[in-house]
Length: 127
Image (cartoon, rainbow, N blue to C red; front, side):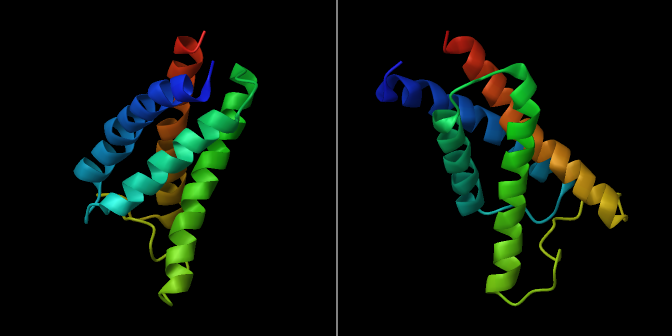
């Protein structure tokens, strides 16, 4: 598949994943909502990873999902460093959850799913 064809496939799938999973989670379970720049960054990272991954095996999908989640965590940590904020202060609170470790675990799952769902759809459609 040529690069143009991949982009035509990956960009809409990535947007559906980012908007369908991450945006909706932020909308209903956190306050305040994230910035448009955050969602553009996340979509860019997702499309880039989909383009770079050669072997789309189910076994590697969890590793790629965790890598994506880690990159998003680095986005938050770089924000904290850039603006002199306290470590983990940028982690959005989830309504009804007070424990920081549970919050981090939930964000890891949400960010991993934001990658995993589009990844599996792209894998299936790219055949």
